[in-house]
Image (cartoon, rainbow, N blue to C red; front, side, top):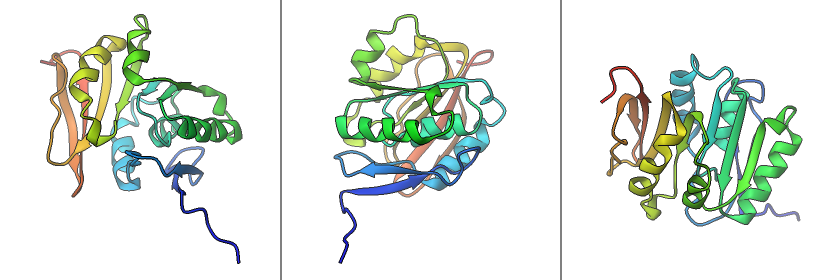
Length: 192
């Protein structure tokens, strides 16, 4: 009798050219992929700005957000992840996707990586760290200068704890599930 590996599950890409592709989810502490429903809502909000976008998935985990952005037309995505096993899964996924070379997989601590990228410039950043790490307050101010003047910022956190956006950002849309609050912010004219 063959048994499934209980240490790994899957999450699927919801839309775009890679729709239905499964991404492996290793059993790692704090790894909690965004649900299909949350991602579908988020990417409906983002559709007008995604074509050609430069994207940063800062706590990539399964890569569901970064790969979903690429699947739906983003030009490139940098997926930063600290966990070695998760990084191996990300590289495997990028290697089997046609056009997966648009994903740059980086194994690094998110804060250290941000500090080492003073000239980075992205159109959109996804910030969905492990909830128990409480990293939003430290990451968001360091990330903000690495986003373009008309950039977008997605933040996902516990439903009970809304992380305030960096100064100069305004809420564009938000949603909630029983466990999660997800918010999309925009910087630019009228922000503040």
